[in-house]
Image (tube, rainbow, N blue to C red):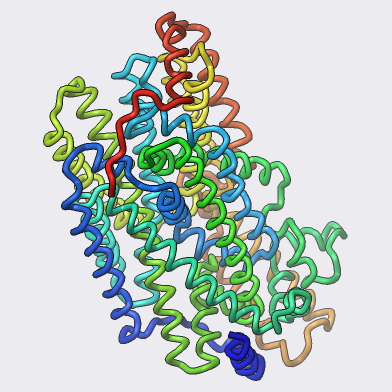
Length: 619
């Protein structure tokens, strides 16, 4: 093993970085398609195997409760580590440094909330869905209906972001037309859920988590070798990179700091300090609240705790998931900073303005330093992993949404609970097909839209609407029907409303102002003789690009017709979460229910002991 690392180190350290050589990114179809084919074949084999085991509603929704704690932990990690995490966070780190890393920490800490508050009670008190937990001591029909709408809303926001990401990824890397890519992903997703149910979805998520960790680990080792396996040299490479320094000097926050006399003269060091992306401390607190509390309210995460046979297994699955997810985010940090050093922020933005292709470009470049084939192989493997990641996450989302509609609305509201097992499974499969089809249509319609705010929307709704009512239903005696409905409705509406008028939306006038500041600063540098002759061409081109960006955006408005945001924070959690709790508490106090209070003791015993839960089915 030591000999292999030595050979890798000599090869990588002896090869100069390609820096800005690659302004395009294209996967080799002769390498990529066979790897895609293998992954699709393996996962479809899992679906065929799972279909034979899926006979009852419990099999379809929860794999019969027969998934072990370790298996469920890997599946949770596979459900949670989305393409947005893998590509988006590594890209954010490559463009904004330290703040990108801080962005990822919230997702890890979130599982402490899940472990301490919801994992065991949800597994003991629920059956298939969020509606099962909330309706136990309330009026079941209205509560299930509202809970189903909230579940579908969260799932749709998150699903749309994943589907658009899948289409863009396939379009960029393989040259597949966006519409065909969306349809392809949708068909596979629907196939996994309709035929295999939770068993197939679980094993697809486990396979995907293993592949993602393998790819991230291999690439991180290559990045570490480039710095001689020396952490101090790694950070020195970041701080002294001329490309990173040039990039930081053009960031709006750095320009504002210069104007106010607060900016450090060392722009490379500034890349390793907080505040380049999350510029408002209050915004960072709000984001942290939404991530930490939103995860515990995500329907597709809550649903995973119904798949294990015991409360002990539920706790174990969270601990396993935390270990895997924590390791993953450490690796994405290495990938993000590694891409900033070796691919450069300018090279990354030349391919994708948002930086989402940073990890892909890094893989192709570092592998290509050995041979073009190895670069293509690494890129192809990561493409396939990203594809499997999207399939695993969207399958979980479709299953959660279809369960809410089929189990809560059809079986318990329309049929009043009187549906045999065959009818329940058929309703679940038809609903999954409809939800999957809707996902494809929405994904195609959202091609030209900036969907980054949809992830914020999903976590905002989950933390402001779902979590307050789950926590209060499980732990507050006075919680009742009015409280659940008020908490869900108010929390959801307030969080959606605030996101739609927040900085998450694109404001062309603001983009134009930032572009003007950037080119004005560069023109001043030229006039003052601060630009070296060899950098003059690049600086002039940057000025021209910024002027074109200003012209294209000047006079535009956001989706809601606004020229600037009305709510200053990127995430509304600090406002919408307390509002969600307050609405639920006030409504429960104003409209008390003796029945709900009397049934609290039963819920309390049930959530702590698991009495009344169905026995697990061995898988």
